[in-house]
Structure formats: structure tokens, C-alpha cells
Length: 358
Image (cartoon, rainbow, N blue to C red; front, side):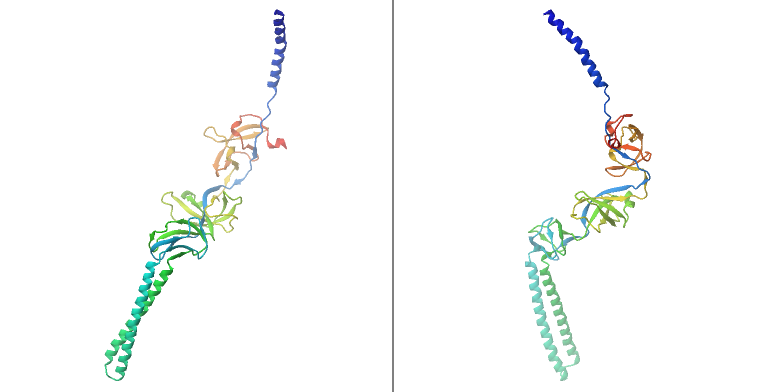
């Protein structure tokens, strides 16, 4: 038993130092420098862009209403329905309007009878006047009666024609191709003449609408060219500011701006979300970097600059450009700036860049 313990002790004395020396060699190996993504800082002036969120709207949105009142008999469309010129959108019950038509025709018949009587009397008394049986004053009276009857007949004809037109107004017809953007009346509802029952958005001319705060109105004067991007479409489009609202919204205190698109991208649809980039007046000295390049632990923003494969912090001035980019001033032209993983670095750390792998 003592011999066994003696062999175990000898084994430990020989192997443990060897194991410890092996671990020391592994720790002594130098760790490989981490790889960082960088971007070369440019020089010169950078145009500052203002970005506004918006949506695709129809340039012409028509509030449709009946020209006569009555009870809605049928509603043939829903919100989002596509319609063509001449399609019947809604109808109201024609019974009341039909009664107006009947009344108008009855008035025409009555006025016609009065006119025939006045004409017969005028003919009779004209003959008596020619025979010198009555004075001229009596003839003038019957002439006046005839003229009044003729005017009443013309008025009755006009009212009857208006009643017939009203009968045609019981059907609400689409004046152009478009999309029904909203419906505010249902079947069975009684509406009055001129009451809006739906909104038709014409699809023949679409544009983008954005809301701009008053301190940035100078960025979007009428006629300025802008870039329009769409979340659902890959390509951008050139736009022109067509209209700026003269008054701010009472709630948001922003101004509505409409942007026309002479050549809209394929697939642009009503209601799509858009992003409008407008160049601000003048330019900003600096370089555009991704937002991820900014390292900030205190009040002053900083960037990591790579010099001789070693990173160093450098304080900069930052102007926000949009949600993804910033304008950085204070970096010398040509400097290599780290643009990803900035919070994993430390001052004086050695790194590898894209240039090392080429």
C-alpha cells in the first residue's frame, strides 16, 4: 500500500509541472486582433437632407352626394372598391321624385289648357275688334291674358323638365375612374340633397402628401425637386413640390405639402407609405457616416479612428441627417473611421480592417 502511494506521489510531481507549463504557453499566445468595419472619411461640403414621412394620395378627391333627397335603396360599393366612369355607386328610392314628375306633368297640362282658352278668347275678340264691335282696350286685356297664360305654360314646362332631371339624380354615378376611399351612408338611410355619402379618389393622378413643421418650410418651397422613396417599392422617384398649404393644421401645427410625381414608379398604389428627402438650403462641411459610427458615453459624441491598426477616440460634432446617417465634423479627410461595433472597442486596441484582407 505504501508503495502505491509512493508511485502516485511520483506521478504528480512529474505531470503537474508539465501541465502548468502547457497552460502558461497557451495564455502566452497573443490573441488575434478583432476585425472592424471601417469607412474612409471624405472631404468637402456635404449636402444636408431633411427627411419627411408621407403617404400616397389622390390629387383629386371628390365628395359624392345626391342632388335630391330620399332613402338609399342600394349601395353598390364599399371602401376600397375600384370603379370606372359611369358605374352606379348608390341609388335612392324614386317614389318621391316620381311624384314630383307627375305633379310637374299635371301643371303642364293645366297651363296648356289655360293657354288654349286664352288663345281662343284672343282670336274671338280680335275678330270683334276688326268688326269695330269692341274698343281697343278690351282687346288689349285679352292679349295680356294670353301673354300671361303663355308665360305660365313655359314655366310649367321648365318645372316638369327639372322634375324629370331629378328622377335621373336618384342614381349616383362615378364621374371618373378611381377608388372609393370612404363611405358614410348605408342602405336604408335617409339623406338630404348635397349630403356627402362617399369619397371618390381618382387614380389617374397620384401624388405624395407630407406634413412639415413651420421652421422647415424653407426646405420645401413650391417648385423644389425632391427624392421620394417608398417602403414597398425598390426604386425612388423624382418629385416636385406642387402645393404648400397657406395655413397650419390647428392640432399638429404643421403645414400640408403636396408633391407631384411626373414619372411615378411601377406599382405605386393609393395609400402607400413614402419617404421624402429634401435638400436643406446651403451645405454642411463634414462627412456622412452611419449612425452606428457614433460612440458616446458622456456629453460629447466621439468616433473611433484607426491609425496604424490601432483605434483611438476622437471627439466630433454631429448633425443629424436622417434616421440612418449623420453629418460628422472634426475628422481629418482620409481618416479611417470604425462604423460598426464601436461599443466593443477600447482605447489603443489593435484591430484588423478590410484593407488587411485584400
